[in-house]
Length: 144
Image 1 (cartoon, rainbow, N blue to C red):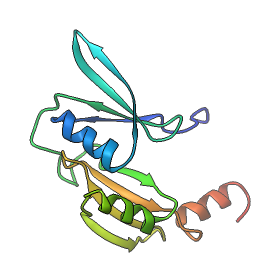
Image 2 (tube, helix red, strand yellow):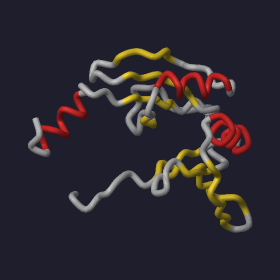
Image 3 (tube, helix red, strand yellow):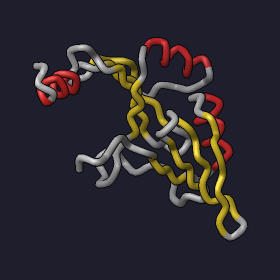
Image 4 (cartoon, helix red, strand yellow):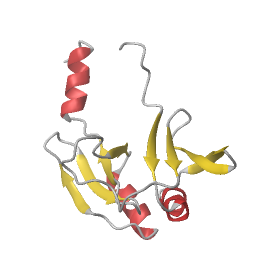
């Protein structure tokens, strides 16, 4: 679909809105933009990633955490960072624990993994100059 500009938001159902807000706002540094209510109850909290990309937190999620890695459905959220070492230093200083240490992935990008309080997997990725994604974009744009 050629009219798509970017991913606008990712919606995450959470059981504990307070611990989720602490994680996404205080530990990852996203700004809370606004809240929506429905039938007199908190329905969605919008968090800013960029000016046009958001995370929606839906309180009152059910279950005991994120589904296992191989389940059908969305698997993880990937956040691209400028410098993965600086990103890791920043979030670990705020108490975030890595679930997988930094490594060079098979696509030639550096990655490290964390999880939110509900167990939702989050990949931190530093796009490499020789990354497969970068090469593919150059090829598509005729700059291979």
